[in-house]
Length: 252
Image 1 (cartoon, one colour):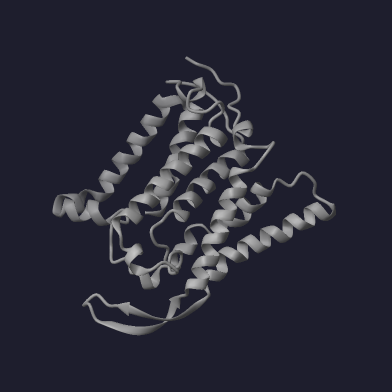
Image 2 (cartoon, helix red, strand yellow):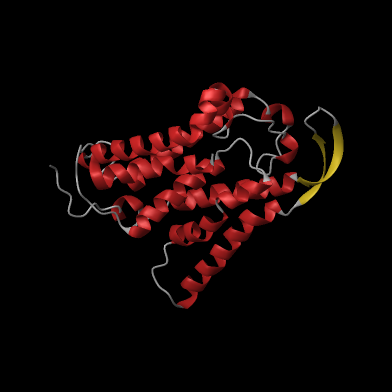
């Protein structure tokens, strides 16, 4: 499931650097490869494969939720809560695309070209991919312990990128280093703050288990997640939209 979180940014990069023809060709190649890999399962039980192979609904227990442990379980289980997070995910991605990733926004010519040749700045591409993945993680209905590997490596980069170091000396630079460390620790510490909680086994039995996420840890994680998203959204003067310049663009 985790690679799917990068797909919006990947598709946008393909369109901006090669146009829609190039993007659709690459997407078709990826779909063909996925169909070839999944062919044995599709021929045996296509319904089960499509429902579960890409991270479909499972037994998402409130007790193991690192990010929403502080919520009452009845709210956590509501369908409207899941839909609200999905809507938030789409809204945030659309906002970043409009204001940070697409030069000129959705109505610009850069996003409507059928064929083009161009080059995106390296740091912009990395920021697009990491931000897209981070938005997806922040809006997940539940994050379990193992999900930390999905994005822990991107947090220092995103924090440094969001804080815009314009100088590499003096107190402003030192303060940014301290803030990057604080944000990184703020993301990783909640995965270490555990206690006892009631969990449920596959057979429906329940028991008290150690190593369960705590409400205080999930509150900290949410606070740091949304703080970092806010810093990325407010990133001024060097916004991604200004940096995402497609060079040598040519319509054929």
